[in-house]
Image 1 (cartoon, rainbow, N blue to C red):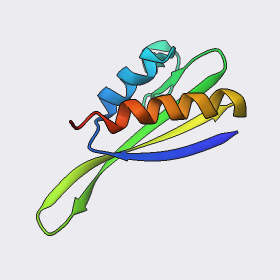
Image 2 (image 1 turned 135 degrees about the horizontal axis):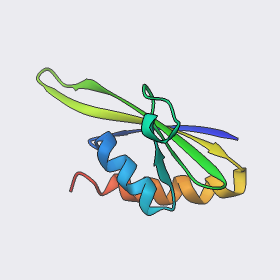
Image 3 (image 1 turned 90 degrees about the horizontal axis):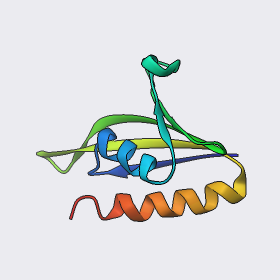
Image 4 (image 1 turned 180 degrees about the vertical axis):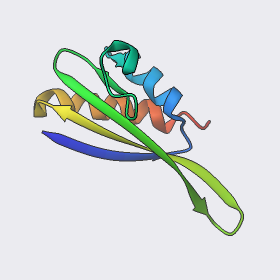
Length: 92
């Protein structure tokens, strides 16, 4: 299963930190992963992250991080919900 979610007001660094707190480990070029798109992986799920600046109103921009979760449906239901709760409180 594949689930894609976007979160505003959170950095990729903080998103990776939250995912490692949820049981993953960062897999980047130093760990045999993709240098252009590092991922956080666990035994039964994988999450890739990307980010971009988005405009909010005439003069404000925020970082929007997109996380693509991949894994078994039962695992992702819980993982996405737990990650989303962490990401929602990041700005405050």
